[in-house]
Length: 85
Image (tube, rainbow, N blue to C red; front, side, top):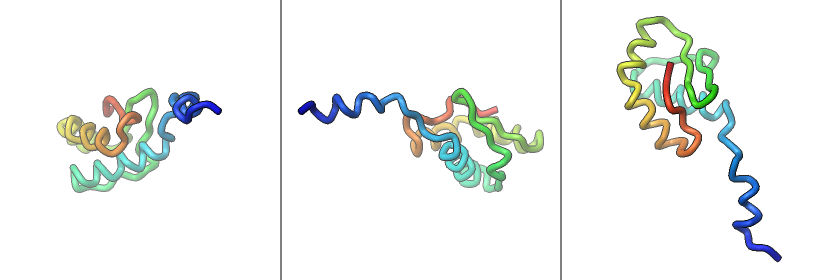
């Protein structure tokens, strides 16, 4: 009988589902900016979070990008986005 770490090693590459990242981003943006962003306006691809909203809101997100990314890393750990566009 092999050890459990050997068994779990094959699942190490599995990433956080896209929907989980989008929901976490929605919560963090709500906490940091005090504004709601619909889940449909958030996309996650290749470690990048895309926000489809007005230019004014996207500018506000860009200004607070480091704070948003830090909170996402805190809640998601390994699967957190590396940048917000």
